[in-house]
Length: 235
Image (cartoon, rainbow, N blue to C red):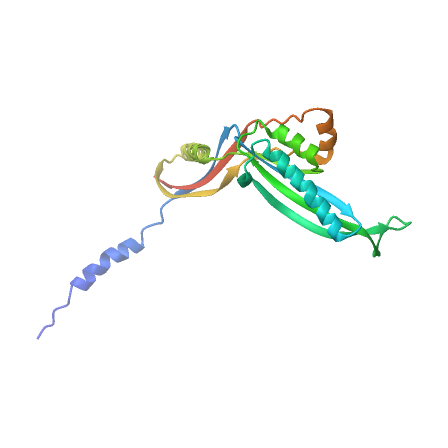
């Protein structure tokens, strides 16, 4: 008696074998950079005050008095408590300097207390007035001044669109020169982005400037950037 050979399993294997032999699709990967600029509507300032005294308690008390005066003065400029934050408090001994110009850690000369206060301004026009007021009230350090946006979502989206257009333009140029055409997008990944370089104010001479004339501060424009990676199928 003859036995029939089952054909169905063999037929099912044919498409799988054919599929396994298909070449991998040709692809082109490009990166795109985008940028959108706007006028900052927020400023962040960090002031500090340093006090020295013979004892730790005296240094801390003097520093607290100084920073309280700074805080109270800034409140007269309509800066709300939620926009003020203590951003550093330290208390440490300092030492006498010997004849060789070195500090002798065996002899404590006194104690130094330092306190930092970060201010957020919802707007940039009053930054100069805030600097002058803080210095006049007793702050003896301006550690930083930076500008930014209260809400940068719209600018960030514009930068993303610009990045995608930039990547597409690069891909079209490369494909044309290679004699191929672009197919569908296989992958699209957003890389890191964010704000551009922020202006920085050097506070080493701020007391002299505050006593001489109002401190000029200009926010200018600031860029928000985006970066994408796109892989296209080639045809």
